[in-house]
Image 1: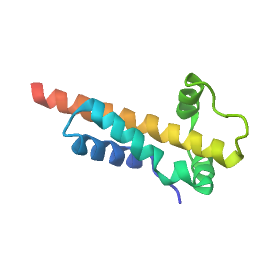
Image 2: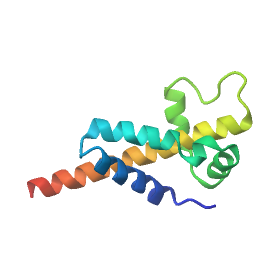
Image 3: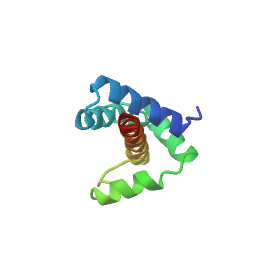
Length: 109
């Protein structure tokens, strides 16, 4: 499974934007929940695979800003899933911002 991070994060952001009736705060909550339930955030094998295939530096930084990547007692798979979740979350939030910026641009043109 080679995931295209851009396409996956865009799909999540578009669904969030539509499901939230174009409300940014609700869309961000939807994105968080979608990423938290995503297979790369749940299944250790998928998380490890995702981390192997993707640049996870943005997600790792997000985790560091939240208190750290690893927690005491974590397994390798748990850490990989946490990094995969945060990387997907950051990418989806960036895509949402792109969508909002694009919509605003067209609203005022």
